[in-house]
Structures are given as C-alpha cells and as structure tokens.
Image 1 (tube, rainbow, N blue to C red):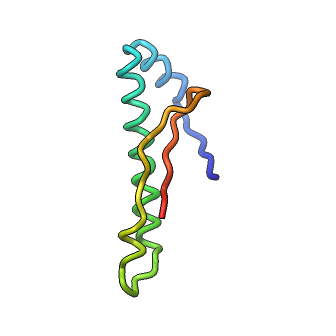
Image 2: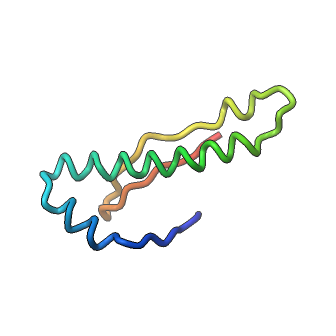
Amino acid sequence: MTTASVKGLKELDAFLSALPKNMQKNAYKAGVRAAGNVILQEARHRAPKESGKMAKAIGLSSPRVNQDGTVSIQVRL
C-alpha cells in the first residue's frame, strides 16, 4: 500500500466541512478518483505491450467511504 503526504489539508478540510454531507462525500470521491487515474495511467504505461490486453485490463474500482471515514479506491487488474 502506498501513502502520500499533502500540504493544505487543514484548509481543505475546513472548506469541505462547510458543505452539506453529500457534497463533502462527492468531493472526496472525485479527488480520490482523480488521484487513482494518475496511478492507472502509469500502470497502463508500464504494462507489457505485446498484445495490449494487460494494459486494457487494468482499471479502477469505485471510490468507497470506509467505516473510519476515509475514502479509498483500488487500481486492479
């Protein structure tokens, strides 16, 4: 599993806290999906190019809100 450090999260959290809950959830999911797309593109780029089937098979799961309130997404094959 990979973790990342991001600056400005306190300010972002304060901004998102002012939004209704459903908008907060959608904003977090959109951000996680955008980050997942970066990793997805890199994984497809590094996949073997013999037939191209592996690169096409790499995909993203739907963003999920976990029980602890975090949002996660999976890059899968």
